[in-house]
Image (cartoon, rainbow, N blue to C red; front, side):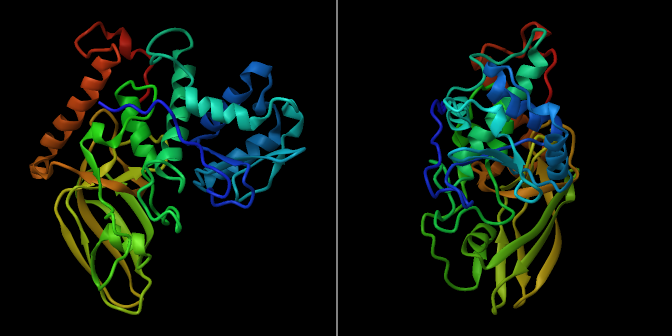
Length: 349
């Protein structure tokens, strides 16, 4: 079993922003975002939530489903923005000798806890902070061009409509892990070929997105089974493209919506004429039984596909496989499913 104990931190020039000292934090709701930022300030007894301007920034970000909240620390200034709405100056909240950069580095490398906070008066808040940490750390590894497990071409960065870190964070959390686990731990493999060059007009969806020949305009999930995944793809070339969406291809939610991620059940072949935008609904299996089904939620193409495609014979086999993995991880963490139920008190899935 592989568990990552250190998180690689993006170096100068690695992030798709103008200033090198810019750090990405993730939050699916206003409360989660503020909780995540407050975790960085706890030691100084300061609070982000008091300013109406801060809440407004987060609310605007959540309304636009931005999922990208950014803190910037300059020589004499600290700012927060969602890169779409206004910038809010937070300089006065930070001590000059102990800045946000060290706070975030320490949070990502150490994590907020030594054991999964299953019980206790503060369990709910601690779980929220753990979710924030897992998302930030996993996305740092899988979705940033300098991350150790970034599978896309590093020069181009993360393609539009793609992302993998939230899936790793979600699955790690379901197994009561306090750090992001390796994708191998969930029976997944990278679907992106080692060779980053894609020639011709016949290719997999991953190859097409990697090469920029196909752009994912939108992806959303609803329930599971027939027509569960709605894809909108744009052919950016002057050629007719033949795209294969392989069985086992996985789509994730972009944040903590606590719904089931989706996996393509049968290989599908699509043809897109030059410049065409194609709307297509595909059949897909749900992956994590303990969460509710997707309800027209935006989704993202991950870099993964399922290793053992024989599991794609039925929804039941898929659920049994992943629930078995999560149960084994919980047991490894000291919370076997057959033990006293107190281990699940207050747990949000």
